[in-house]
Image: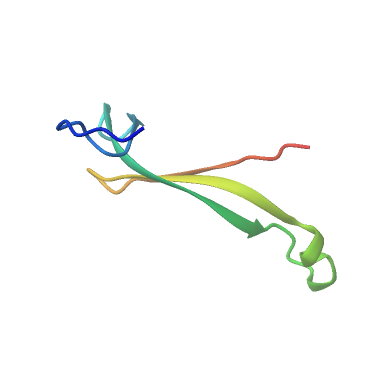
Length: 66
């Protein structure tokens, strides 16, 4: 649902560096975890990456722990 008020467009999360809830840019990246070429195609995993728009601190978390 679209809003027309002055609310912040984005996702706010707690930043450990700022010690505040700040605006974050969040994305999903597919990363290859294996260093062996023959297994690389089977070792791709999704990671949630978020970056604080105030201080630039980046963190990532593996999404699939199977």
